[in-house]
Amino acid sequence: MHHIYCPYCEEMREEEEYSYTGEAHIERPKDPASIADEAWGDYLFFRANPRGIHHEMWYHTAGCRRYFNATRDTHSYQIHETYKMGELPAVTAPTKAALVADKAKAAPAKDKAKRKTKAKAKVTPEEQQGDAS
Ligand SMILES: [Zn+2]
Image (cartoon, rainbow, N blue to C red; front, side):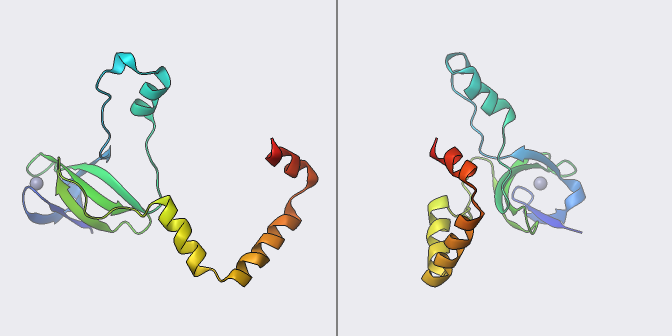
């Protein structure tokens, strides 16, 4: 059984007391009438679905009945932190640029060359034409 820390009650409580209510930090457009339909649709329907660090809203249904945010790893289910509404998370996912830099550091140059050769062998002429367009 998981226990989640409620930042308002300041206690660890059983997971059953809470309800997950979706992705956190989604800002409603200031003037919905002035934005494009696509942007409005993105706001209403599209949410991140990362593997790893995710900021999400929870509701303490059987407790203080208040909303708060949590930073959870969607892969391990570990909750790194919970924080009150209006606060910013201390734990954030690494940026794409940081991930690419880490990968480049971790993989030795020789290994990289091998992978490139393998990848090239698998590409058919039709695929190469597709890439060029
Ligand atoms: Zn609470």
